[in-house]
Amino acid sequence: MHRILKPNGMLLFACPWEQDLSVYELEEFKKKYKLYKCRHIRSVDNKMIKKNFKNFKKINETMIISVRKFMEFTPYSIKFIQFLKE
Image (tube, rainbow, N blue to C red):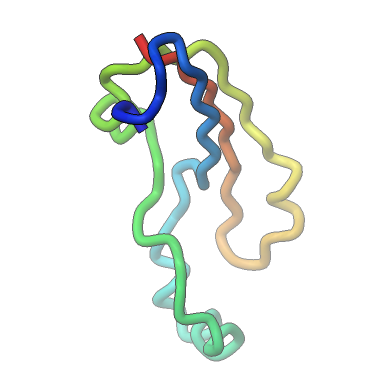
């Protein structure tokens, strides 16, 4: 992302925020969603943002929690983060 954005380029990043990944190991989840072979392999948190977006300035962030009511197993929020390439 850093390589392809121009200076002062804007990046909008959306991610599952601090998701409990152990839900994918629950027998109930595996039984119900056995057709899904793809899943999140990591959850995003502030530590990951700092490590992977060093060359960007965070200018805005919005947490979306309304989606949680539709999640059957360990609900999590979605976070949108707006960065500016420095």
